[in-house]
Image (cartoon, rainbow, N blue to C red):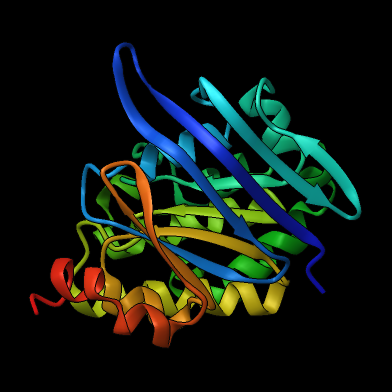
Length: 244
């Protein structure tokens, strides 16, 4: 059972003089998939960068609770945060194209707790993504976008995550691969007991697996939906995603 959660309160952040996030507050409770919805340029990736320590916010807190222990993430290095079990599947995948599938996966298991479970996690990834087993010796750069996204998700699983951050998993994928990718994230959350924050602009696909969601507009949380039905009924969703 998942015992990890994430609490963000009053977060402000930006780049130089450009403010991107304005008093962002959200919560991801243990075992939930929470969708962070918003079109391009509304601050979703900036928020992910703040959680992972890649960008220091000017105000606010980011707190993870893992197995009853609270960790303030602001001021910690990305390495320290990953060591806690908070792992990102980045937008654009960020793989090593000249290396094989298996080499990319093994690189995901660099934190001490993951190294100890490397063989078991590798077997789990190959069971979950049979195509990767078939192509484990293939160079990642020669694979399709959908296959590369499988590698990126599996590489994150190799890190033995407790909290999984997924940034725009549908970008650049064919519609059939978008559905499969979202389904895989939902399945992995259930099988591994993960807590998941997923930034996604494909509203229709995201709410299929999300327990709850937040809509970001111009760096602010414009709406919080306590269920997929609440999100579906919101006027912002209808305006930005459904064209109604």
